[in-house]
Amino acid sequence: MDALSKVALIGSLLAMLSSSPGAQAAGQPPAPTAKPPRVDFGKHDVGARTAPVAVRIDNPTDADLELARVSIPSDFTLDPGGCREPIAPRGWCTVAVRFSPLAAGVRAGELRIEYLAGMDKIAASLSVALTGTGEAPQLSVSPARLSFPRQGSGGRDARQAISLTNHAGGR
Image 1 (cartoon, rainbow, N blue to C red):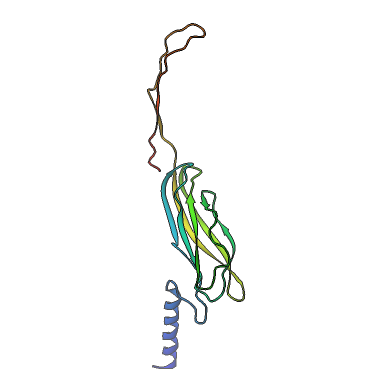
Image 2 (cartoon, rainbow, N blue to C red):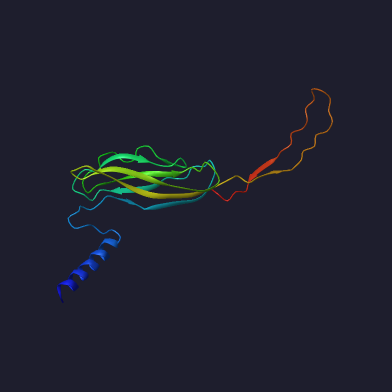
């Protein structure tokens, strides 16, 4: 194999390696990760709050991982507590995310975790895709009409019951 063919082969191999998920550049420390990479909360009633879903942040490096900022869109919330910084070398922590849709329809955004990595404290970030669907209440009242007999001033009518039902498919 001539020198030009060897260069072409090495270039092809490097391109394949760099396009592989989780590929690391030679000499680079492993990067922190967030798992799962995406969370779909499904359908929930507008204004309702879901059970928490845990997102794990792993620090596979040999240095402390300093969390600089954690941000989340308004349809999603973080439970108090979460990760205490810094995350020890080869350690991990979890944050609990909930979905609380503010409006009907598909709601999406990302949990963004900004951190300072390595001995040089290089700024970087992780993100977790968040989705869910807010469902508006679909209410019905039964009976549709109430009738009260005529009565003089100050009199009291017998109580009448009504039923209010939400037919929305959310939780």
